[in-house]
Every structure is written in structure tokens, then in C-alpha cells.
Image (cartoon, rainbow, N blue to C red):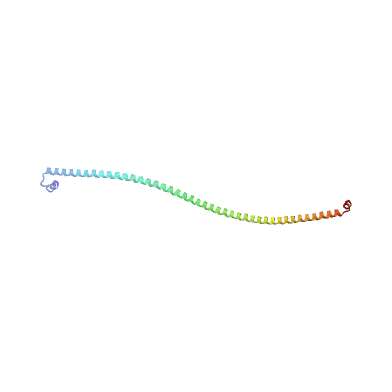
Length: 172
């Protein structure tokens, strides 16, 4: 108010008072400018501190991101290795399954061949047993005939001996 009145009434003020008023105004302006400058400087320092903290935080986060990217790359490589191993294992499993099927088919073929050979051998054994039975029957029949022939031969011999003169003379 004094300032406004002083400016408005500057003609009415005494010359010493004008200078004092001017000095006061400059002092007031200097004080407010200095106060505002210090306030801005504190705000600037706070902003710089926050910016430094933000840069540090950003750098830490970038470092973390790089670290995570490295880990992600390692995980991707590991995943590719595992996929390759899984594919290889699946291939081996398929090959093994095919081998098992082939082995089973071979075993079945061998089993059928052995069964056929067994059937053939059984048939041959039956034929041989039948031939043996026939042979045994023929041998038995031949023995019976031989026995009959020997029996008749013995009878003839006995009849011959009885008919012979030496047996007749010896008789009483």
C-alpha cells in the first residue's frame, strides 16, 4: 500500500524519502527474488536428486531386464535342448516300438514254423508208430508162423524118428 501510494504520490514525497522508498523497493524485490531463487534452487536440487534416483532406479531396472533377458535366453536354449532331447527320445521310442513289433512278428513266424515242424514230426511219428505196429504185428505173425512151422517140423521129426527102424527095434 505504501508502495502504491508512494508511486502514485511520488511527486509529493521528499527527495530523500524517494530514494529510501526506492531502496526499500529494491531490497524487497531483491529479498523476494533471492527467496524465490533459493526456493527454486531447493526445488531444482530435489528434482535433481529425484532424477538421479530415477536414473539409478532405471539403471537398476535395465540391469535387471538385461539379467532377465540373459536368463530368458538360457531358458530358451535349455527349452530347445529339451525339445531336441524329447524328439530324440520319441524317435528312439518309435524305433524301439518298431523293433519290438518286428521281434514279435519274427517270434510269431518262428512259433508258427516250429509248430508246423512239430505237427509234421507228430505226423511222421504217427506214421512210424503205425509202421512199427504193422512191423510188430508182422513180426508177431511171423513168430507165430515160425512157432507153428517149428511145431510142425518137430512133429514131423518126432514122426520120422518113430518111423525110423532103430526106434522100432529098441522097442520091447
